[in-house]
Image 1 (tube, one colour):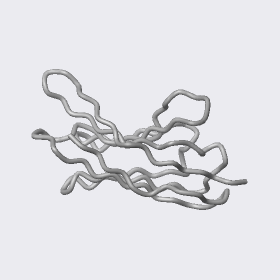
Image 2 (image 1 turned 180 degrees about the horizontal axis):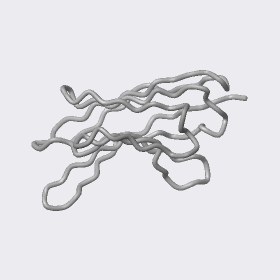
Image 3 (image 1 turned 90 degrees about the vertical axis):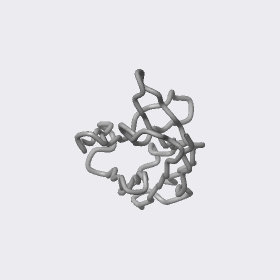
Image 4 (image 1 turned 135 degrees about the vertical axis):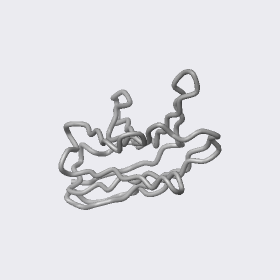
Length: 118
């Protein structure tokens, strides 16, 4: 399974960015897809995810109302629209996908850097 992420970059506070990720190589449908991030000096944390089974989304409290996660099941793409970006959103963002074959299996993209300047 491979996850290829794109997007990210440098933006001023209050600006917007969009991240996109395409998953491939799985013989079973992805159970969920989403985004995590790792801020400087912090551990990796969930940003947003979307279930393929229920289409329910889950967001970190700090991004609710500002970020939107969407998914195109036809081509296994997940996107993260980030609005009203804050310097605290500066992080490496990782695409995530999960399948279930007896157990849960997690896969990660290569990470893309988002830098928000004040």
